[in-house]
Image 1 (cartoon, helix red, strand yellow):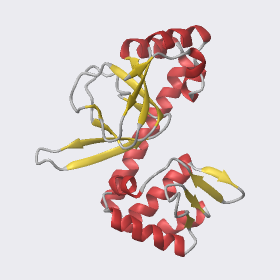
Image 2 (cartoon, one colour; image 1 turned 90 degrees about the vertical axis):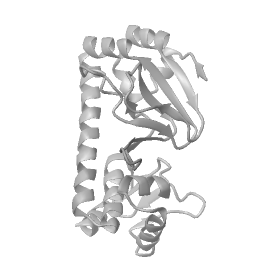
Image 3 (cartoon, one colour; image 1 turned 135 degrees about the vertical axis):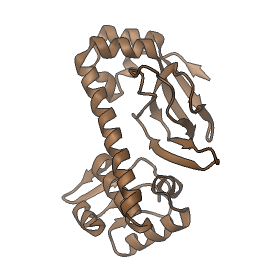
Image 4 (spheres, one colour; image 1 turned 180 degrees about the vertical axis):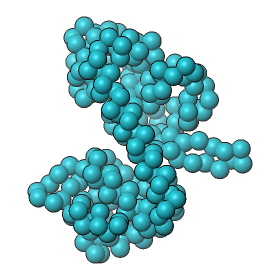
Length: 233
């Protein structure tokens, strides 16, 4: 199900704040707000992209499946993240399949409009490039973690990097991961089981590296990022 959108609503998304009023009007005229249920496919692997998606609400799993049906989660997209951003390649085929982990709301932007905005607005294009580079760096860090770290180290490393990149600073040393990350999502991104994630998270909580409540365990307070980083090393 999709709905039209207003320029004022689009302006609440940080990436679109770099667009002019005229560009926002153009974007609003061609963009739909699309709603998906939990565990619903957004697009499969290997099809020609028609849209660039921006996550406005919800969590989306991006992954690939091998010939022997083994699934690999490449990343999980959260609020303000971009899907199908490889629109400037010669062959803009989806590089992963996308499936919702929660009820999700997306902006669906036609590729032609997205390209037009990126080529006419240098500041918007620069912010887009920074987003893509950050995504590539995260994938490289995860790859190194898979190769060189054991399960416990991968989980702690993921918490540290997420806190560093997405955490909300509280006081002098604490930061809050408030994206609603579940044990299942951490397990997918660290190639571990939910049981292993729960065990390590409980251990970190007992040792006062992190804190989370029983009712909101997906919101994680890191007591001290520097100490957590040293624990990883």
